[in-house]
Amino acid sequence: MLEIENKSLLRASGTNSFPVENPATGDVIAHVPNMTEAEVLTAIEAADAAMPAWRDALAKERAAAMMRWHDLIMANQEDLARIITAECGKPLAEARGEVAYGASFIQWFAEEAKRVYGDMIPSTLPNKRIMVIKQAIGVVSAITPWNFPVAMITRKVAPAMAAGCTAIVRPAESTPLSAIALEVLALEAGIPKDVLQVVTSLKPQKVGELLTTHPTIRKFSFTGSTAVGKQLLMQCASTVKKASMELGGNAPFIVFDDADIDAAVAGAMVSKYRNAGQTCVCANRFYVQEGVYDAFVEKFAAAVAALKVGDGAAEGTTCGPLINQAAVEKVTGLVETAVSAGAKAVVGGTKHEAGDNFYAPTVLSNVRHEMDITQAEIFGPVAPVYSFKDEAEVIQCANDTPYGLAAYFYARDLGRVFRVMEALEYGMVGVNEGIISTEVAPFGGVKESGLGREGSRYGIEDYLEIKYCLLGGL
Picture 1 (cartoon, rainbow, N blue to C red):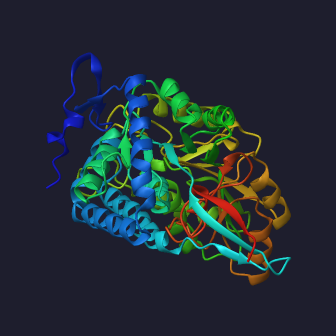
Picture 2: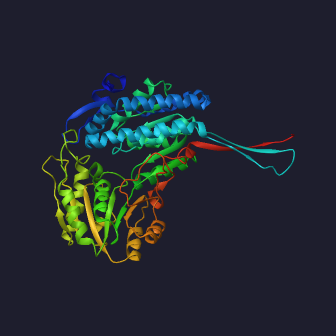
Picture 3: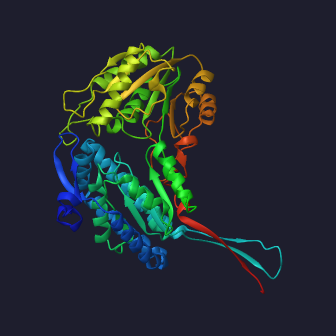
């Protein structure tokens, strides 16, 4: 069993710590250190000191250590899942899936560590050779969100560590326990001390400033809101730090009249209601062609009504709580404003009796594009459904947002599939699929949804510097 409560990181109480609460029950489940700026600076120095030995280790040695880490995570999958559910609220089945998903990035990049290739470029002169090598960029820092407290860490630190970098992670204050558990397992796997460090704090602005401006840190990675990401990006500019940003989304989910409606409903359910709608790639706006609008809404509403709302740790729960009261108030406001403007709550539309942080899974019909909810990242279990006439109209509506992370559509006409796939201004497109995330594909957005890509063979590039070497006198 994974017993992180026995580790020194959790021996905190009083003024130098802060509580972690279960969003389903409101119970305090642990206290973690409220680290000072001086302690964060010490972590940066320790990461810098640990960097040379880790960077200079053979790639296969780093890979072997990371594979041991992967194996320990999977051996403790159930315990990690229960930690995720306790601090994040998502149903246990989803939490188990997240642990496996998070571990997959460690496995993938452990393998990629051995495939960081350079180049020999044909020379312009006979006595010279042009060589290109790739080297670890340096100490890396990351700030991660609460909604995927394991996977958002591994997706960042696994490529960094595979490249030979050391990493400092500041997890969301709502979900630090998953991060601490990952650090504990990394140490048990034999990854050297200070190669991966977790810093917990209730001072996000101060810590964020350190992690984005300190000259020792050469790469910064962030997942969170676009507004915060813009501020952090400006701070990174002070030291011309390489940065990758996975920011807000406003994903359209389009159902054309030639779609398999049952498949579209199934895809809509997993895309929208996973983690109670609290994911950056959740379907946010449902556009259904007018000829199949009524049929889709009827089947979709029936599926949503069958969701079981409750504590994620309870047997059979399929929709857990929102993370806090602020999230509930935001969702409530969006729904009430839409309904007052003419939308209809086919299912839900109110808070749920399961507890203070619960909102009933909701489907809104008769939604119009000019309503406020259209441009909001809902981040809750609410699906507004719009009607559209033709392909040109829906593409214009789908692209009418500053965001461009993920998009989904269902259609069977092959010509339409290619036209729409290419016309959507998004970094990721699911065609007849509601789940698109995988470690082998590049995850990331365009426009104000971010910079860079995570996962896949492209994911390690942000953690490497390219060095050109000219060899003369040959």
